[in-house]
Picture 1: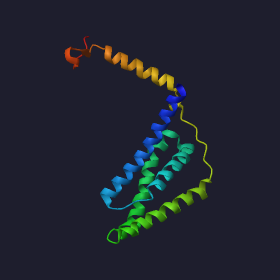
Picture 2 (picture 1 turned 60 degrees about the vertical axis):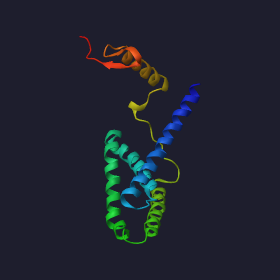
Picture 3 (picture 1 turned 90 degrees about the vertical axis):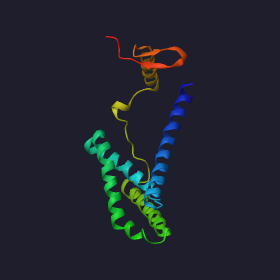
Picture 4 (picture 1 turned 90 degrees about the horizontal axis):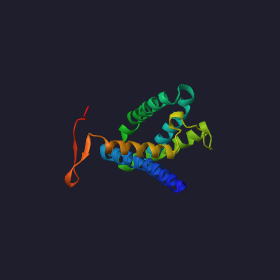
Length: 164
């Protein structure tokens, strides 16, 4: 049963990654009118920079600095290359971003290698699923039993200040 729960959580996590990537693609296309096929390459650059910065600065600072660095890279590419293609045929932006994606992925392979980089989980994330479930259960039980949320007729909840 625990294995099934872990697999469900892993599936939800991977699904959330895909959702974020798809949302990024749709937002970029709707706002800029550019089909950005290099979106995944930027995502990979961010992942590798996080690993690189974690070794130097620690996870907390790497988590904050990496999005800014990837954003600056994206701004530079947009200013230097994509602005020239806005008024041209849309297939040119598609081809450029496709080439950028291929170049970016190969550059990451050359720099970091073809195999994955070992990355340890930060200490504050090392929690077992059972302790998280226990915490959620006890928090929910305390929430529903607190005097601030009292069950009243017809299934409605009223919010009252706690009795002190």
